[in-house]
Length: 258
Image (cartoon, rainbow, N blue to C red):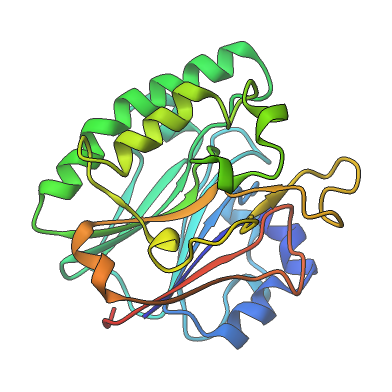
């Protein structure tokens, strides 16, 4: 089973850059998209409905903003939209597809970089989602939560750690929350790091300066999985041959069927 997570920073812009042609070449079982920045009625063109895939969207109420999507080869048994609180639901930040005893979700965690109020909202989001994630670990279901979590975990996950540790996405309290997520307190697993412990494995680059050319990046896109899935991981890669957005798609192969 191949699962791809991709923040497209606008699904229509990414389509023009060849995302869906690449997606069909990769032939993943599930694709989780963040930042669609579109309403479903704007996605009638054939390119947005690639053959062989079911598609699901959870749009933000604000047009041209946020939003998540899931494409899957298999029709899900159930679709869940939202998490039950305002910012998650009005901004289209969580979409989940259930396949038997497996749930695959697309999550777009808020950024706090624009202003202080958004950082406070981001920390509230972390507080609210923590018990839900713990329930997922303790349930009989298996979970793959793909997405842009907007937080680097450790020094190895960002090029300029010292210059950014007072900025949203690299704050001590944010990284401490990831310690809890991947530690005993919650118990989820960072799928990528199970297979790849190398440095400079980034998934996002600022559009400012020469960040892409110099590989001055951040690893903020994850596939966060239930512990039971850790021994089913086969391979992983970050696709950088083409640029569809300021993020790169994160690809994981699992030794199981959808």
